[in-house]
Structures are given as structure tokens and as C-alpha cells.
Length: 267
Image (tube, rainbow, N blue to C red; front, side, top):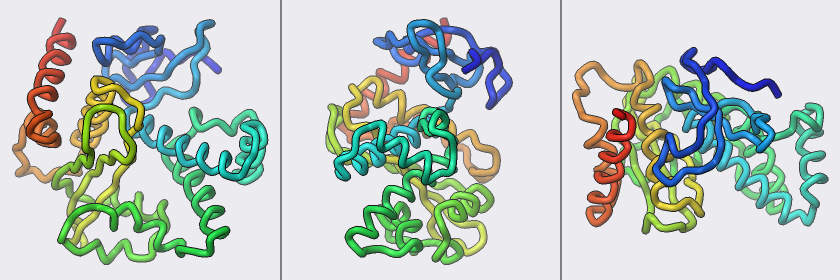
């Protein structure tokens, strides 16, 4: 794969760096956009491990890997057999069947494949129920968007891009130490029907606190900056929004991490 030089998101210059540019204890080699911090890991010989990705796409790939790995291990397959199955299911060459090369819609397709196969075995859940699961799991009393009822996942994501007005982020977790079941959600209002729209990702369970904070920060910041997601009257400070995501006992740690990161960026 060709070594990237221009960022596919913002057109900025890409340099070879390490993840220390993103969090203080980072050591892994990466190709990093100096403008928007999109990056991709690289092998010792300098080859990129995939396509440059922003935080939203990286978290989606991690979620896809987790669901795919759970699926093929439960089937009793080898890793190579699992990727052969994936290539056949997606109708692509085996050399292209790597999650590190996939875009958001392709990741969603892999997740659907795995969940569909699992549900066919157990005989539960319709396609419409699966597409709305990520919204129904959010902790909110506001009714779900009626426009998105019975939409597929692809249709739902397209509807959100066109109609969502961002309201807030939600972080569901118990501890900043490695744990299962942590989830980060973006919740907003549908501009068509006025009801709730939300989208979330499961956070990596083995991330150390500083890497977890970095992932949460960049995921939320990317969506915060999407043109059209926030109303013109929204004057909230993103730094305050970020720190408020955490439990009171963790907010001092989050604030300290944020200040260290901003100091590094200014140097």
C-alpha cells in the first residue's frame, strides 16, 4: 500500500510520527495528518497498516473487529477461514477483506453480516429491530425519531447526516480503567419530526485511561465540528462539554488530561 502524503479528509500534510503526538505515553509509529490528526499505524518497514482514518472511523473499525472476532471464534473457525468467509460474503478479493481498509458503510455491512448470521442461528430479531438497536439502547425519555422507523442501518446513517441537530453526548461507563461495556453516544433531535436521533459506538475495553480519554475527545470533537450538526445559537464550549461527560470523581483527571494535551499542541 502506498505511503500517504496528503490527508484524504482535510488535504493537510501527512508526516511519519508516533502516537505520542496524540497522547503523552504513545510510542507506536504512525502516519499523522498535521492538520486534523487523522492517522494510520505503520509496520516496522514503513508500510501503512491501512487507510488514514479519523477518530470516528477508527472507533467503528475497532467495534467491527470486536464483533467479527467474537463471531468467527464462536463458529470455531480459524482466522484465515474467517477472512475467506468475509471476502465471499462481501464479494471482494481476499486481499481486500481487511477491516483496517474499510470505510464506515463497509464496517456497518460487516457488523450486519455477523449479527444476521448469529440471529439466524437463534431465530431472533428483524432487520428493522437491528437497525434501531443503537437508538433504543440510549437512556432517554424522548421518543425515537418516527422518520427512522424500519430503516436499515445505511438508511439511518444517511438520515442522521441530513437531519440531525446535535444536542449532547453521553458516556456510559463505570471506571476509566479497562472494562467491558463502555459506550459513547451522540444524541440529537430530528429536524423533520422533532424526536430523538442518536448514534453510538462501543469503546475498546482494554484501553488505558489516557488512550481512552484521547479516543473519547477526538470522536466527540470530530462530530462537534461537523457543519450543520449544531444550531447557530449553540454557544457551548467544547472543553466544558467534554469534561462534563465524566463522573464527578473523574472530571479532575479529564480536565488535567485536556490541559496537558492543549499545552503539547501549543508547543
